[in-house]
Length: 177
Image (cartoon, rainbow, N blue to C red; front, side, top):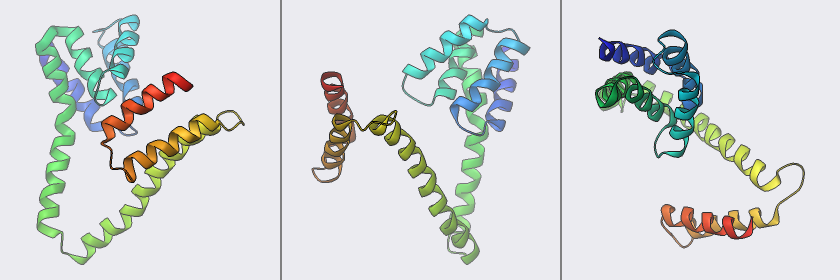
């Protein structure tokens, strides 16, 4: 019974979760702590901390951990599949539309107008992180600026793999920041 409840609850959360992983956490808390009582508030806070430090999307990690806490490995599978299924169906349908109508002028016009918006959103996310880490609270961190420039040059000019750049940046940050 709890497996079907986990699946259905996370199916709804997966279908309604807009705004990224942190926005979804509120829906997961409402379902798992407040409505269903699968987790205590303390367990949920531990779950969020654990979901943040593990690789992968935070909301997906949180869904898996909530399901696991509620009903072990079968619960984790039920919650994870429920959470992922709506996105899987939507992406599959969009892929089918793409393969059928990619050459249509209206469809390519829609996609062409979305690209600048996506670029703007990615740049906005970059700028907020860049401004906070380099400029901070009104002062420019020369070390952060040099680290940024070095990472940019390593990744773009020297073609160093992203994982290596991240590891080098982490080491340099630990030493100099």
